[in-house]
Length: 277
Image (cartoon, rainbow, N blue to C red):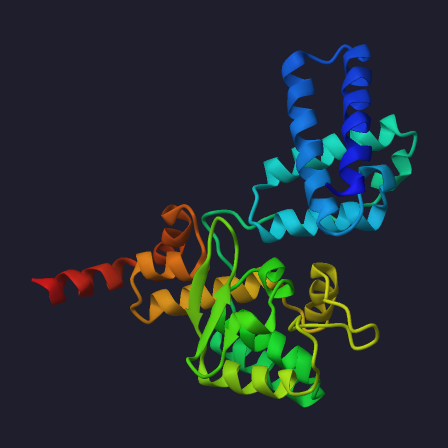
């Protein structure tokens, strides 16, 4: 077991005892404990723990929750728990000025237009950074989450069979690679020998989600925007909802159906009925 696990367990229990002293209800304490255990697990995967709480780690966790498409309410509640924990530690300043980006509402999904898509590809190619070119193409052409991108290893990429595997214990899926994605991936992979696919040019270590978020911000896009564009383009080109859901790793197919609602206006539906009958 990771040393941070041993350190975190009594700290979380002490936090719960403190909450009880603050007259919090048993249900509230149970919820706070569960959220802190989830946060600790996430931190542990990154080699740290709640006993070494830093503002940058809290912010990164918020970006992670947004990338997982958690609701605004869920993220606010989670941040509230961490804010209370920081207060318990006597370090409330750790949660001051956090950047909270609302998750898009169900009735509006932002995607890149044809022009915006072309402009993005043109800009990243003109900059000439092989890694960034590969990142943009992989996110756009596979729809994987930024966390999944960060965890990619060479063994997950099969250029010969045109496949990329997202390896997760609860959701392992294989996504076809487009010709352009294969081309730019190969060019980048030929430039380094690390097992991790996307690495820092300075340290050679695996890129963090925040680093990729920051890089894409330079092009005025987010991983979520590129993921939405992937799903919307597939739906617009006639790929069935079940297939898109499987490729995107949506556990709830209703998440995928949001893209249909956007693309099917009254005329689309009328044309479909006329064609069907």
